Length: 378
Ligand SMILES: Cc1cc2nc3c(=O)[nH]c(=O)nc-3n(C[C@H](O)[C@H](O)[C@H](O)COP(=O)(O)O)c2cc1C
Image 1: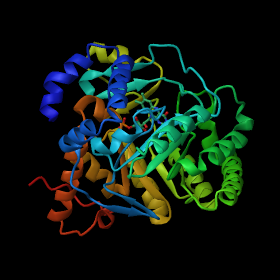
Image 2: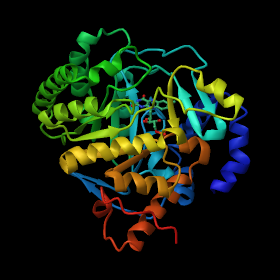
Image 3: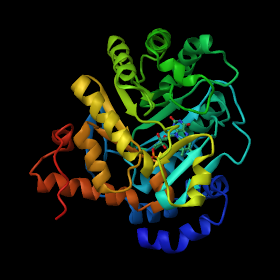
Image 4: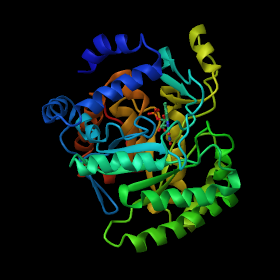
């Protein structure tokens, strides 16, 4: 089906501006969500056989999830497992609704398989998001695979009020997700990345832990979501180490590595690409792959399994996914490659991971995490 997508669907979608194409695809998924025939047809094409992974108290049907930003409003929540994903992260969502940056704000670096975006957390705000989630839950269309929410700071909120805002978001979203990701690494909200500094992060995590305690007390029947921090790929090793230490001090569950990069590849031979690379924003996709894997490896070297790693950045194939697992990732996420390779990619990646496990004689993915085992191409 990748061939079908690349030959027929992608050329049509790529005639459109990236955000328009994105919205069209998302609307189509949303309108199929309450039609069981559509769901099962999609599932028949896209779903891989299970590759179960147990992380904490959560069971994932497979380790490949949808990355944040694809479904910012949870419009198509029920559909992601039918696209083959083992879990899905909705959002980024902020406390206050906000329009994001002026359009155009998303660009394709076509020949290199990259995307640049400066969306700026365009989203309807957390309360509208919860209404959408409630709609799916009431309609009995809540996915059986784990669901995460990506939480960001509103643009209008001063940096010094960020801890309180993240606390409020965590409390509001507590009973609506299996995991919550504190996004302090988007390059498109001014100053946000400063929250990765250890003093600032300490303040955020303190407020979040207090909010978590309050939320757990007022929702004694719901399972506590695990808490993660999403990091940027542009941190120095020293800054990353300080961040990790702060996360460990606060008993955080895991790290999502990584968000998009503000760096650009050194040279390109395509002038069209060079023009795209001059756009302000975060770069994702293939050009991010190796840096994101380096960051995963660094985190795993420093922390081992004390922090669980969700690896994201430039996964376009089973080989890319295997390298991230070998570097230390227990779970994986995909965004850009879905745009370039279409919905059958998840199955290709999951099947490829299962094949590597069997070639290496391993019984579970967990045994491959951090193993640095080579990708065997037989
Ligand atoms: C258009 C777009 C919007 C994104 N929005 C978010 C977001 O709201 N929150 C977040 O944490 N990451 C966001 N991301 C980053 C992705 O979740 C992911 O970390 C990054 O794209 C690298 O993965 P990829 O190479 O598979 O795309 C966004 C990425 C893109 C391309």
